[in-house]
Image 1: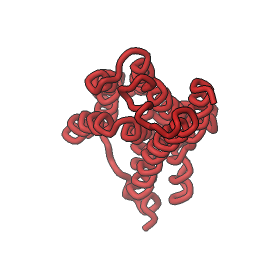
Image 2: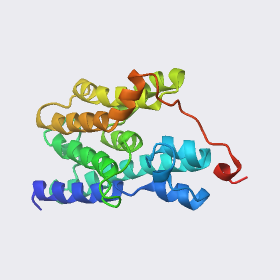
Image 3: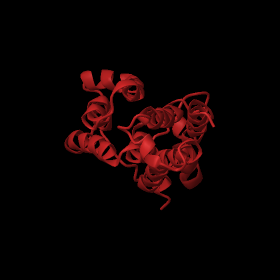
Length: 223
C-alpha cells in the first residue's frame, strides 16, 4: 500500500478513536453527571474531577491517555508492517518517515479536541496528547508531563500547566530530533491546544481562573 494512503487512513481512524468522549460517558455512567452542562462544560479530566469526582476523573484520564497511546503504537506497527516489511525504525520520530508518526500524533489530539461525536466539540487535548506523546517517543511525552506538573502542582492551575506543556511541544520535538516536515504537525498541535485554552488564558490574566479541585459531594462520589 502507498505510504501516504496508509497514513491518511490511519490518521482518520485515529481521529475517530481519539474522538470518543470518555469523560462524558464515564461521568454519566458512574455519577449521572452530564459534564457538558456542569462546571466548565468541558469533557476532559479536570471538569470531570470538578463535577463527577475523583474516581470518574482518574478513569477518564486513563482512558484518554490510553486511546492516544494505543492509536500511536497500533498504527505505527501496522504501517510499518504494510509499507516497510515490519521495520518500525523507518517510522521513528527522527527518521526519514518520521512525518508519518507526527501526523498520527496530530490526528489523535485533534480528534479529542474536535470530537466527531459531539458536533466537533471536545476536550482540550492534554491527556490524549500525553498518551500519544508516549507512543510517539516516550521521552517527549515525559518532558511535556514534567513541564505540566512543575507549573500545575504549586499553582493548582491546570490550564497554566497545559498551555505551557503545549508550547513546549515544538521545542522538545526539535530537541529530540524532529525536524522539517515532521515538525509541522507538532506545531499545529501546540497552536490548537493553546487556542482551545483561550478562555482560560483570559481568566488567568484577570485572576478569575478556577484552581483544580475534586468534587466530594454525596452525589459526586457515590457515597
